[in-house]
Length: 161
Picture (cartoon, rainbow, N blue to C red):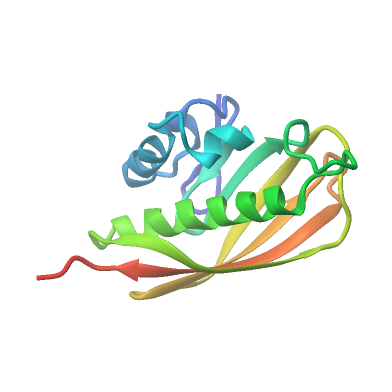
């Protein structure tokens, strides 16, 4: 049912179950928190997490329902997926310090688009510090073609005394 990876995270065969996609109890708690509300953009976009850790976060998103009028995957949907993945990974990192994470910057280059199927986003940590984190995010189509390359920065907010 699950498959261990190098950073002790678990890759899901059932992406709906946080217990199978989270790397540890901390990642599981963050993912459950993010999925608790039915009114989030995560739900609206149809994002299904497949792996969650502070170093790497991945998920799929359907093209259907996330298109612009020409029937192509909306660029904003790709960037929303990118920021979601990086933010969840950043929250896993921040939670280990008793802190929170908030996005501060997202940028992306759209290289091509998709008309159908699922896209897969993967956020990989470039920097994980005490006050900031930076992730590189790739969004790929069903044929593994790169659709969007993004960079997302988040600030770590520590509790005030």
